[in-house]
Every structure is written in C-alpha cells, then in structure tokens.
Length: 567
Image (tube, rainbow, N blue to C red; front, side, top):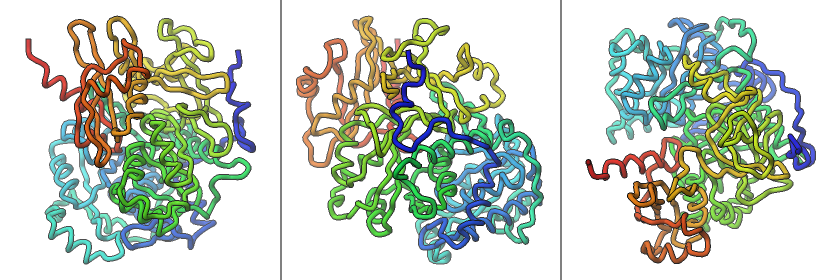
C-alpha cells in the first residue's frame, strides 16, 4: 500500500519535501517591510497603512508594552475585531517577548473568565466599543487581569473625528474609566522611538507564540499551544502549495479581502501572517457584509479571498451579485466547514474563479489539506495533504492500527504545523495522540488511491439510527441539491424507536417556497438510503452561526435539548 499516494497528484512545481527553517513569527513583518516599505499593507475605512508604517507602529507598541511589564513569560490577550489594531498588536506582543492569547468578542462571560485564568492573561488589548470594553472592564478586579489597553476604532480610520461621532450617535462607544491606573490608551503605548528590547527566542519549535483556544463544543475550551515554528511552518506550507508552475500568488502583487475575524486561526494564518509574507495589501472589513464585499472585490480588484462556506453562499445568493465584475479573483479558499458541492459549482459560474477547499484545525495552525488551483481536483474532497504533512486513517474499532486506502477511519495528522499540546492539559494532549505520535482529529474520513481526503463527518456527529451509522454530511450534501435550499444542517434528535433520527434545519433561497417534510423526503428518495432519510424538518429564516460564520450545530442541538420533555 502506498503510504504517501498524494505525491503523484501534486500539481507541477509543488514539492512535498520542502525545506522549512522556522524563525520568530515577528520576522515576517521585518522582512517584508525591509523589502516593500512603501507598499500598502492595510486598507481600512478610508486609511492606507504602508508596510514601513505598520512596522513602525508595531515597534513602538512593543516598546510601550515592555514599559508596562510585557516580556518573556507574560501572556497578552487580544480582544479585538477585524481592525488594524489586531495586526499591530500581534506583532508588537511577539516583539516584546510576550505570548498572544486570542479571545473571541462573542465569548460568554463565563468563557472569558475561564480563558483569563486558564491562560494566565495579565494584560489585555481591546477597543472602546460598547460591544467589547464593558466585558473586559468587568474582569479587572474579578480575575487575574492586571492591565487593560484600550484603543479607539476611529483612530485607525481615514476620518477619525467623523467615525467617532457616528459611533457615539449610534451608542456604539463605551464610557472608559480613563482615570483608572490599570487602564492604558493604545495610542499611549506608541509615544516612544520604537526601540524595544529584543529577547532571544530560543528554539522556535518550543517557544510559544499563540494560545489559541478551541471552540469548546464539549466543556470549557482548551488552549492549543502554537509555537513560532508551528505558525511559520503553516505559512511555508501554504506558500509552497501556491508556488507551482505557474504560481498562483505572487509576492508584492496581491490584494486580499480580509473579512474573517482575526482571532480565529484560519484568518490569523491565511490572511494576517500569509498576507504579510506575500507583501499583500489587506483590505479589512470590520465584519462580513455581502454587498460591501462584492463592491470591494469589483472596485479594488481583489485577487484573493478566503472565507467559510456561508460567506460564499451569501455572495452568490445576493440579489445584486450579477451587477459586479468579480473576475479579478484568482484564488478563493474555503475552510472551517465542509463546502457544499452546489455552492462551489455556482461560485465558479458567477466569478470564474475555482473555489478551493481545504481542511485543518486550530490544533494544526490550521494547515492540513489543500485543493490545487491548477491540477487534479475531485468533487466532494477537501484535497490532499499539504507539503510536509502526513495524514493516515486510524481504525474506528482498533486504535492500534491504521486502515488501508479507501476505508473510513479517524483522520490523524502529523507535521511541523501540529501544536505542541494543550495548555496545562497533558491528559487531553495524550487523549489525541496516537500510538505512533500523530494527532487524532476526531474527523472521520477516507483517503483514495490518489491521496485525496474525503471527510464523512465528526466522530461525535455520527448518528446511530436503528443500529446503522448515519453521517449528517451525507444527508446535507443530498439536501443541498434541492433548488429551494440556501443553507442546511442535520443533527440527531431522540427517537424512541430508532434511538436517533435525522432532523434537517433549512434556510431558503430568496423567493423560494418552503417544501414540506413529505416533499423533501420524496426529493431525497433516490439520494439516500431508508435508514438515512430525514424524519423531521424545520424551516428557519437563518441558521445560527459561530463567531467565524460557520453553521452552529451545537446551538441547534442545545435548542432541541431544551424542547425535549422532562421525565
């Protein structure tokens, strides 16, 4: 049996055995600013920031952070939206010698408290927005948090006074306790000459760069320890996958549409770090808005857009999509959730740009698989292993052996991008480590003879219906073929007879009539087995989403649990 069948499927010019010589993550900015100082790095709400200016802001912020106690061993939280503050802050914290801890602005208070205490966050950077500041101000005195650095969204825009006035009029600004000595202005950190003390990093394979918490679908979130080498390697792997003949992306010539929230690992690596490595201009949107995205793609001639499937669904489903010229796009990557085939096909028709699917995890920085822009592609596959990555399928019945090509198993991964382990959780780290040192992902899939990976579903999402294994991904792909469907998610609901039955939650395309359960079952009759048939249907205006725009099955399952009768 071939152990690396994907090698023969790589596109021309892409090598698996690339050399990766990891270095401190912050040197990505140093190198790009030295080579491309005048090139735009960020474009945000009417303001352009060059790479030379971004480097200066990061250096001065690093010096300011050191003045308030940040250095080796100090963990600094970033509780920020998609604004230039994030890009400045992450490089500044690393330059100061600290470790970044990412926080989601949509985390509940209990989760925020857990992350602060668990990660040992002493300093946290946020903005004076009503949706952000009050939550963290409350943590001062209630947790170990000692310093709160507060910036203003308006200060990074092209019209600071006008933006601040608009936000105040809309009630979007918080009252900040500026007289509290524990609170420091973000701009105050930059009141210096940028001469910070550079601390020796040591081995980048051991030095922690980012604590990235998992989604916490079971219990409280765990912190994945991502080293400088993990993140550096992930960038190198992405770069290698688009450097074939002809190369897909060119240094100094790309313009990214950056709408993914930067606290998520997908955006952090693909947009922020990879964008800097490529000397790309990042057109940043505070949040995703389909019409605003369409306008910028057309007017600014965006070349690269990475998002989650719901974003692509929104773009091609927007009533004004046909009014915009989207042909400047040459690389669009989908991750974070399975990409419906129907969405990929329609996106290609609308934009002329193939939508490439990849798979990865928080714990893998998040590299895993890629689908070549040029070369072999397979419908329904998330692609093949990126350079320097090993993927094998662990038997679902016997965790001491891997299954042959074509058989379903738990996807296991190894490579320089895979986390050091879970922060303060050696037990959890051991639980996801195979007998030979690979990482168990919890995803079920198989690899074909060409090395392409097909994901069936999460282990825990597998339904057991009358003793048969039923995989929601299979049902969702079938339902997406219905002309009325915009989005769908399938979960298991209790069934006294079958144990579990599949229930579909559906959002409709504009103007589409809602099918009844019987009509949907009739449509699916030739697409699903009897044991797989949907037994319940609920039509929604929209499906609940996670902070990064993925459909949240956890929220749907929680709603169903609350509806269940109490015995």
